[in-house]
Length: 448
Image 1: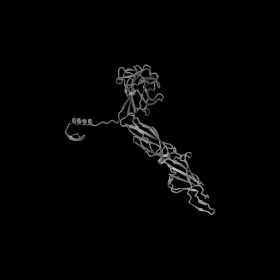
Image 2: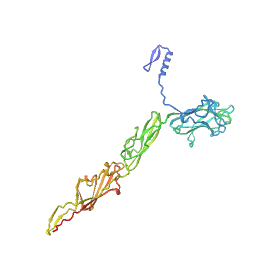
Image 3: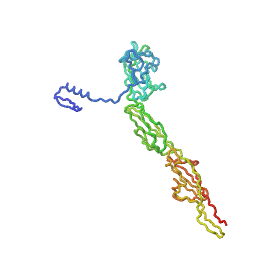
Image 4: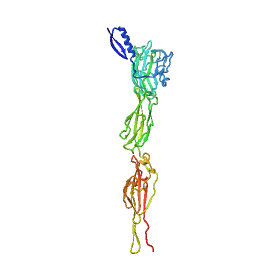
């Protein structure tokens, strides 16, 4: 009896039966065919030159649309490339005049990687001439834009003349990610030929084929609106809406922010979209900025943007109306008597009593104004300077003062000022002053 396998409800069972080895092999192969295969990531072709046509040309043979008009060619004095040579599979690019080309002569391409990350490059080269073999040693370099610096990231040697050798799939440095213009060049790094002795001669050829640049993922673009805003302490921010302009599927967002000790109320990090909440400040009269760093992620690639919220208030509240003076007479005559001279002598009080609860000196919140605090929430302060030097201070409407106030004969003053939620006070020169003028009553005399 043999040992075999049976598939039951998607499971591979080990069974003992008498089937042949050949039958078991067929069953096992069938099992392997139904095992799902998962790819860790999908790749995007950024640009390639594989010269599929006969004859071909220098123009890219594939890639993202922005790179389909890109060219490959020689630089530094090597001869102009031709494209009718037999390549690794179809055709290739080839050129002569590599003599004395070390650190000068090269193959070069330029393309964009904007919105792409996780880049790799590979290529094939060979050097050959019936009498003199072409250059052996190469230095692979990149440059960002026309003003960048050439930087070596790989070295490559063609080990045998007239045999295709490969620059294995090589990761491009992170600096090459998301660039509007990236240059790559294959620079001769010595004048040594692939075979023989001496140096590379003028007639020798170098060929290049299957230049392929790939990306493991697309960078999800991220934008935030509004980009900046200024808010009052203790107020809700304008919601920061996060978007993905290039619509990469599966994009998720997260954010962090700084200055969380001074500006409180919104967490230090989150994933909400839009970002909302109230920001309070421990130093409300100083303008303090918190920066939201927003990250978009998709397929292992990410990009960031920022949005700022500045919180502060140093604008004082003001009065829209200045109240005028208030006039009173002294208290009514409380008693009088007839003196021996025949005159009526009145007892005249020389003050006016302002009774607790009177609303004469109350001010309407409709006459208050502030940029951040509503009129109803402004704090009203007052100070009374009485004739004779006595000072009374209070907060709130004057009618709420729990005691009667005696205004002496003459002119006293009430000064008002406001305080907003940030602690800003009405400037001294803008504080309304109400004159409280207490007038005497006329004398009463007998006239007969």
